[in-house]
Amino acid sequence: MRWQHFRIYPKQFTETDGIPPMTGIFGTRTETNLYPLVFNLFADHKEEYNILADHAFVIGPYLQIIAAYQQSLVNDPNPPPFSMTVF
Image (cartoon, rainbow, N blue to C red; front, side, top):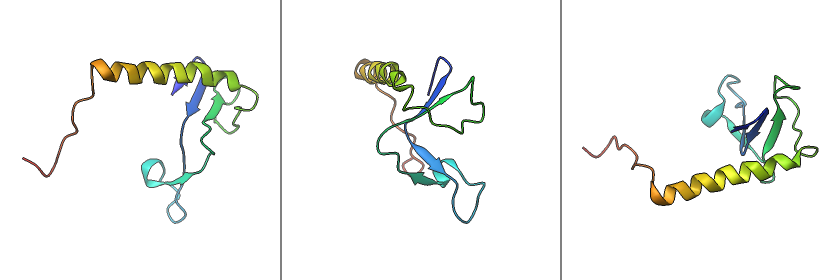
């Protein structure tokens, strides 16, 4: 998720051991102790340095956006997922 010039990752995935280009859902999950990763996109274009310790104020707006999304699901829930086995 992006807020202003910060990018926030609630979960972190790394490359797999055997196949380095496999990232995302195919990668392995790295434990972050339930804290998101925060990067400043203006100062760190490659997103190499987690700045959560110095910029913890970013978590407040992040949680407000998440709460607003969860509240919107009450009145307008997501459609059911597509099933490839039930026709």
